[in-house]
Image 1 (tube, rainbow, N blue to C red):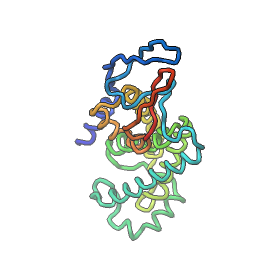
Image 2 (cartoon, helix red, strand yellow; image 1 turned 30 degrees about the horizontal axis):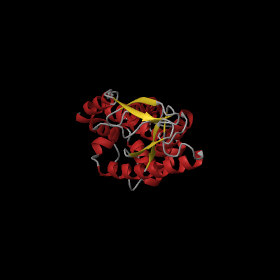
Image 3 (spheres, rainbow, N blue to C red; image 1 turned 90 degrees about the vertical axis):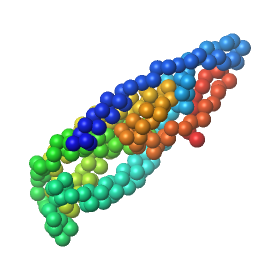
Image 4 (tube, rainbow, N blue to C red; image 1 turned 30 degrees about the vertical axis):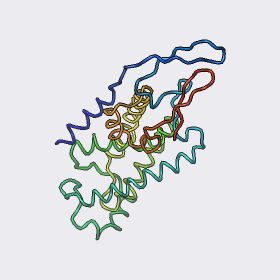
Length: 238
């Protein structure tokens, strides 16, 4: 399956990093020459050793509701796509719409089932979606534990409230979406920051767009460089 082959290659590509750098001179307050190394793609960098993420200084509640808005909209769109896919892919009953109320009741009153989806859907697509959930919070500066809790809650919401109208919750999806998704999401998050430190090349922008779209929605690629009087350089969001 093409999807099964492409996604692992993109994941590996995320760990690529551009090391090309140039030296730039700045005059500080003490009239001394300061030499700093910066990338020739210097559109993003760290300030005081930490990446400046959108909403990292706001309350957790604001980060949560922004994440919920972005992810919730994506889930509704995702459900629409699944409804349009052939039943051989979703494994849903032909008359699941007529039985939606019954299916939803069974989802909440009966235990999850071991589904029959193929390997790519269960162990690649769902962890990848889980990483999106995770990075909806992590790309706003949330701590790992809160990003994991958000990812777990979104997985539960999807299985029991959205997809639950078509089928019983999946044991594999509940286990792997948030757990494996969080591990993958953290690796993607750190790799994104490492790439952003030297600025994103065109190849890296493509990789981040595919693997970390929530980072893109929250932080974009374009930053305005500012120069401190002390000679340090940092970036702000436009």
